[in-house]
Length: 212
Image 1 (cartoon, rainbow, N blue to C red):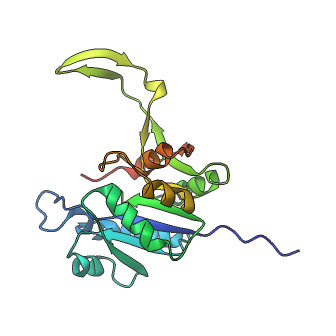
Image 2: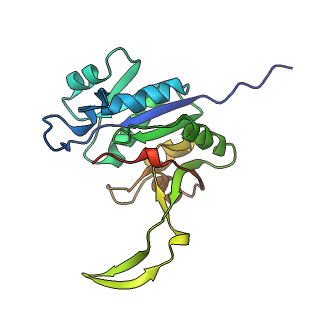
């Protein structure tokens, strides 16, 4: 009997934003952070984890700066769209030719990417079509009524959602193709859930904080 091959996974890194950090002249994902570009940190982590391919969504006209930021790494660039959701959809279409079993979708602005988070996400896809890293809310939460305090919110029912988010490739590709919601979809798990897919919550990591 031949062993069953392990599922392959690819990755998309969303680096198509135009936002600048204070004192920087380039989009923040290409700025230096701890000795290398912000985007390079997570791309290297994904490759080290075994990604079969990494597609990076970048702003239009940014291929030169992106190539410098990711020099010598085996990545492919995809020109992003006007919104994050559109950028991801374009990257998924570019990745469709490879048809991986699974895909991780990550925001470049979260440069620290622990390997154990990737492991937990991929393992969760054995049972469900999607998986996202999440952390509990530790502060008290309230609903806002304009500029005044509304009713308290039950923080035990809330989670802070991070990236990368993991999906069975065919499911998330179909979900983006059929997306009829707002063009500014909050994240890809929202897109999958709207298409009827179930999304697992796995333990996140405080190191996955987003740079602003």
